[in-house]
Length: 318
Ligand SMILES: NC(=O)c1ccc[n+]([C@@H]2O[C@H](COP(=O)([O-])OP(=O)(O)OC[C@H]3O[C@@H](n4cnc5c(N)ncnc54)[C@H](OP(=O)(O)O)[C@@H]3O)[C@@H](O)[C@H]2O)c1
Image (cartoon, rainbow, N blue to C red; front, side, top):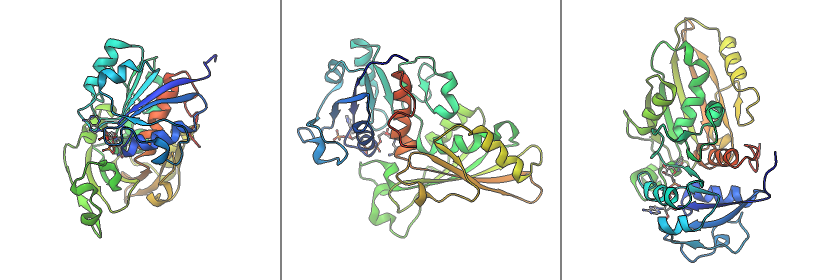
């Protein structure tokens, strides 16, 4: 493949947890130059003073949608809270429609004119789209945990999710308040969470998802209960997962139930546990994922690499 030496990329919402991880990844990318990073709060400050992975002279800037579009970069990553993407997309559509946009929010995950980028499950649908919606963190874990058994399901999978509090972003709330989370587990949005609807839409089956926030900073444990149409032996189920994810460096099928403490700060997902109920028509599977990496920034970089014509795993340690 003949690719230019370097592409320019900007991050909108670069002060946040996911933007910070993305700066870290792009700082080590051999074919991407970080052209701008936006933050209202940190405007004027040096990125290098906030992110030890970045060593250049770039400073945060406060940029509205038109100013972002005027930068004329090859790709823009939107790392904004939900509901904020539209003006940026509209400005880029008007000024430079061939800009690749990767949106980390839920704003375009239900829009069929955008590519939904969960590469291990959807890359065969990628056909050069420049508008890419990055999946939710819990939603990534659920889909990867369910997909190998999708055709065998006898009913909605039940998904019990526990996230570190970085999943709630930097805007102060109960869900990212370490004081309220100390010695605590905080259930919330127990039906109809946006990721429940996202997974049901993407997989085409209903799912039941019950999220919780825990006192750790990063990483999700997703425990999924799956009812099967026909009895299956444990080794048959493990083989289905191993076959499905063979050749996927970011998905590791493990024997025992994975621990979130072991994947925090890493780029992949671990899926394991595979515990049969008596009768072999019910299995419980556990997936762990770093919500800020494969749940957000790493996945965004997979999508960015692919859209720029680079190897999907460029600059992603694996
Ligand atoms: N955290 C996760 O685990 C995770 C995982 C997957 C997906 N996501 C999604 O990724 C997106 C970013 O999440 P995050 O956790 O990184 O959020 P965050 O930590 O709260 O950061 C939000 C960023 O957006 C900027 N911002 C906020 N309101 C803005 C506005 N009205 N206009 C322009 N900039 C604004 C903030 O910077 P300034 O205020 O300084 O401008 C900040 O840089 C969200 O949509 C989230 O749902 C998050």
